[in-house]
Structure formats: structure tokens, C-alpha cells
Amino acid sequence: MREAIALAKKAKKKGEVPIGAVVVCGGKIVGRGYNLRTRLQMATAHAEMRAIDRACKKLRSWRLPGAEIYVTLEPCPMCMGAILNARIDCVYFGAYEQKGRSLTDEIAQANLLNHKTVVVGGVLKEECAEVLTSFFTEMRAREKAGRK
Image (cartoon, rainbow, N blue to C red):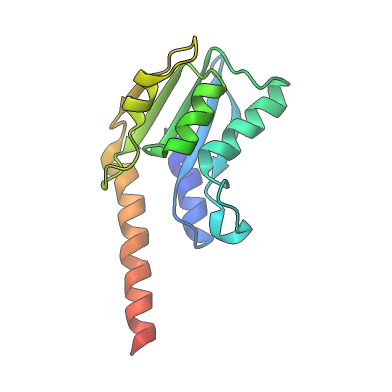
């Protein structure tokens, strides 16, 4: 999770919503990603999607059985769908999505594939939440200063 937090901080420095993700397989990092939606102007440029894409390329397979993904924020439904489709065994996330839009565990439980993904939330949640909270606090302060 610490590597995912470091990636989130990298996204923050680039002015992106600070979310980082790391895919681990066999004890080794096989994919990394951080949020780049604004910079790339792509709806799918989420940290999880980028990390999964890189892991698939590295392992030369769209299936990642035996893999785990670590994410600083609870995955959105799109990313959870990609996690399930990639057959990732377990998703660990830090901060909970405060607006309740993620439905991560519900999507995992309702999965109609022949694969089940374990969901573990709240891993280093204070540290993960702090990166996000500080980003939005600083963003609001900049916007307020710009209006004066």
C-alpha cells in the first residue's frame, strides 16, 4: 500500500486527484498506475485501470490470477469491473469513497463470473485519506484565492 500512496502523491504533484494503484503477483509488483484523467482527458485513465493494463502487458495475459491490487481509494464501479474481469484475487483499498458511489463489495459479491474477488477496505485508511483531503483542501484554497 505504501507504493500506491507514493503514486498518489506523484499524481497530486501533477495536479491530478491523488489516487495510486499497484498490482502484485507472486510477491512482485507487476503494474503501477496513478490517476491521469485530467492530463490525458480520458475517462478511463484511473489508477487501477493503468496498473491493470501494465500488469497484463508485463505478464502477457488479460487474466491475472494470483494477483492482488492495492489502491489508495475504494475503486469505482468501472475499475471494480476491470478487477473482476482480470480475475484479480484480492483488492485492498485504503480510504473509503465518502459519497457511497463505489459499491465495491456489492459488485464483488454480485459478480456473475466464475471468479470471486476478496475485498479488504480501510488499509492504512488515515494515510490514504490524508493525501486526498489535503489535495482537495489546497484546490479549494487556490480556487478561492483566484476568485478574489
